[in-house]
Image (cartoon, rainbow, N blue to C red; front, side, top):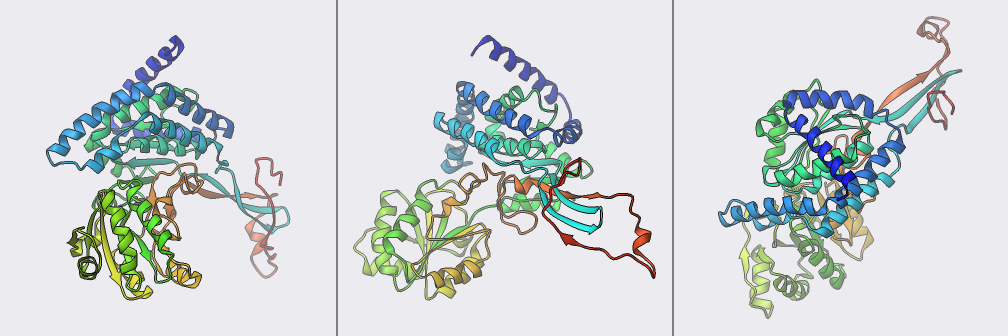
Amino acid sequence: MTNSSKTDSQAAQKRNQRYNDKTAEEKVADAQAAALALSNLSTARRNEALTAIADTIEANTDRILEANAADVADAEKQVEAGEYTQAFVDRLMLSESKIESIAEMVRSVAEQDDPLGETLTARKLDADLDLYKVTVPIGVIGTVFESRPDALVQISALSIKSGNAVILKGGSEAARSNQVLYECILEATPAVPSGWAQLIEAREDVQTLLEMDDAVDLIMPRGSSSFVQYVQDNTSIPVLGHTEGVCHVYVDSKADLEMATAVAYDAKVQYPAVCNAVETLVIHESVATSFLSQMIEQYQDAGVELRGDERTQSIVATELDTDTEIIAATEDDWTTEYGDLILSIAVVDSLTDAIDHVNMYGSKHTESIITKDDSRAGQFMRAVDAASVFHNASTRFADGFRFGLGAEVGISTGKIHARGPVGLDGLTTYKYHLEGDGQQVAAYTGSDAKSFDHTEFNGTWSPTNDT
């Protein structure tokens, strides 16, 4: 690290210490003040800040990995004690390649179109009376997330690009990693309004955050359904929840079985610890034997523990030449996000039964159908209630970066405001700008009332009304 970099880092740490000395209420107040200034920061300055964040994170790779190694070591002890799963630790762990991908993600956010100041509609109310619907930041966003320290960077990057101030609360298991990453972000953004990003660490600060409905505009919790429900029950602030992903791959009677095998393998094995990994495989009975005869061996080689309904168990025990054990699936298995190399399997009689199973047990996250029949795919995709529904593709594609959103603050399984991977658009709202020339409502009332035009036109609002 150069002397200049050391100086910048020391200054950032001093600023961070000042922030840590403040109460949660003071941090939220600082964020609220910063949000007003940040919303007026130019696109160029916001993008410069993002580039600086990416560069600073890469320059501090060793420092980040050192902090993360300490977090992982503590977490491994909790695995031995039965408190954490290995999948939980996997989500926590960083590497040089992971840090490179984090920096790449930040730069990809900088490359996205500016979500602010976009004219969504332009409508002429009357001569010289034009109404514009224009995108603006939400304001102050509070986020509570667990395990994955890269989430802190993703959320921060999307927040600054969308002009929002952000309150960050990570899990205690990633405290050292989050602290260093946060310091890197502060170091990289001295030209951004002070206080735009705040880190809170105490558990009691979360309750304080939830009570500050006069200052916080949106809460985004990332965690279990019970945790998201807790947040919803304990705040009057709008909540955009990222909950568990109980995702399905349905292998249809018209499926290409080679394709189905490859997709089902990728959806479970490529990275089982994330919310878009498949947890239940649903198979049409007409192809169940043929499909399982090739699929089970691949899962067995990858160390996947398989749980199945009675029909799955019977097929494997009586029709396949394999010693693979299929554990009897319980009712709880169908609603469980394993986040690990565990998979439940159900055999169904029809496409309709598959849709019913997915809608009954799924978490409305991501579902996929494998079939060569487009009409059957269409039926599945229309009938399944989920934020993302795929045809002939792995559920692992449900991701903000892969969707071209730059990154994501989470995947919303709700239906209000934003749904699916939440990127920049999900962090904006809009307001109306009316450009007039002294018009008065009185002229549009009474027996001689003027009529409104209400014609939409191609126009863009600007402060000088240059359309």
